[in-house]
Image (cartoon, rainbow, N blue to C red):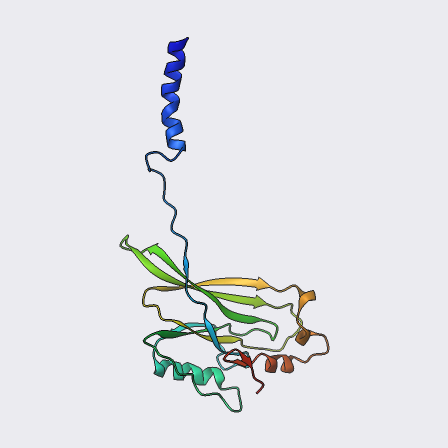
Length: 199
């Protein structure tokens, strides 16, 4: 009887050892992403300055001037492009394309992850998380939401992560009530340096 129990113990021991993580042969989970400082809003509008769906990282003053002029063109007095130290910062622009005044787009967060590249090497990659707020179909008027933000410079590979958010229709803000015209909603959505500005 003792001999049989000894044999059984010797057979179970490797299984217990493996279940407890012994041997280190299991797959390793990737490390959690490292958040970068949150992006700082520079400009928001939905008036149609950029009508195509766009995701772009801007790294020089000439490119910023080009996109800034397009983004702010619906305003009667477009604001000047912001001063950016491109040695330390970069600018991110996200445009939704054709939408309605209810819908929004925001550069939500920036996450640095260690990922395998095509050569099998671990490299730091920046994930730019873009959040789209979907509307409830109350307006048929066209709008073209876009946001421009500044962020700490990152020189490695960049990829975009798209996330969608559906706002419950009963919780729409006051600017979306039945007596509000689509044009006034569009004007209310212009923000410069995080502050609301009406054209």
